[in-house]
Image 1: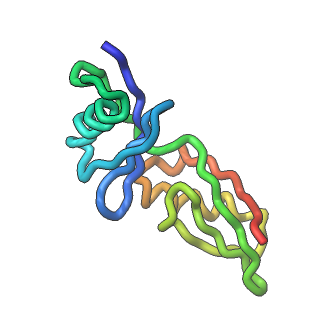
Image 2: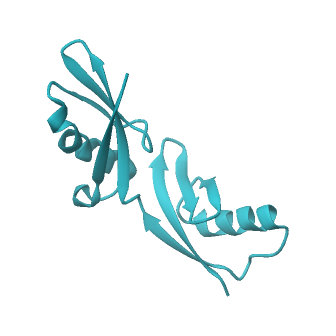
Length: 121
């Protein structure tokens, strides 16, 4: 029985399901997630995955935040969690400033959020 690790990210209408090495699908609830992943794999590979073991892991380990200059401020947005937005006056504070909104929207512990900041023009 194959095992698949699936990273879950909360979004407005449900959950994104990032299946390691396979791709991304979605589910309305976490309870539906294992079956949604099995169905996704079955369609993708053209065979039955009903015996596949699905391990759900909350959130991602690392998040990318874009920083764009807007006057005296830096506008911040998380790539993986687009609803996570903020702003800072000094770019050096961007990563710390974004941990809380990312954690809140993605339903993950704030201490587990690692942020990489990318400056965009």
